[in-house]
Length: 234
Image (spheres, rainbow, N blue to C red):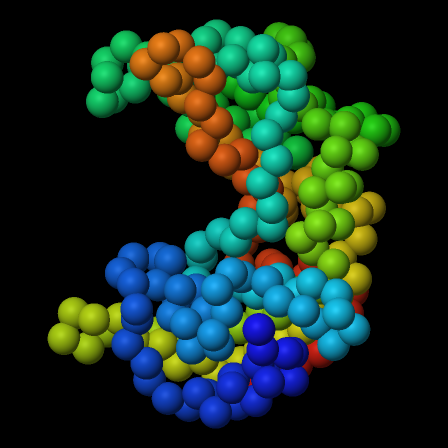
């Protein structure tokens, strides 16, 4: 795999070029960049051998970036949340689904008529309904382990985007190394509603729980604000 300095050299070489997307829809910007950099996955060794998470974004976008994924516990509580708060799947007409964004500073309304929010304690975050019933959640220790594994150092690459002949093209012309995203800052951003929790739950045909990937996400334009140290390399 290429080293960090080689990747920076490649970024400088492709900067200023318009490159056709290797994949349609939102994931095209990341897939194209990974192909250009020769990275099979979205992380690679950094200058000191530490893993670096690669993230890319279109400039002037309102899209969200996933910081990491972590399912709440216990699974029995998550299933109770789905059964009691969810609503019938439009495709099956029967099995419940629950697709909702949760914020630390307000309740979110659910199609079923319920409201769901977050209870943030000294060492936990729980998912609660409007009656303050606790269904499931995360301990800080579990979140910290997931957090440390993904957010130690990030290489953020930004691109201008345009369409020619109905094909999206990218010009990767700005890159930053981001560091210093502390766990305390992370919890504070959840409390402020800047980092949201994206819940996507469903049921398999046999009735077992299907977590499509509970994600902790932030608006792409706010990602740099999450880090204490920012070094522009392109």
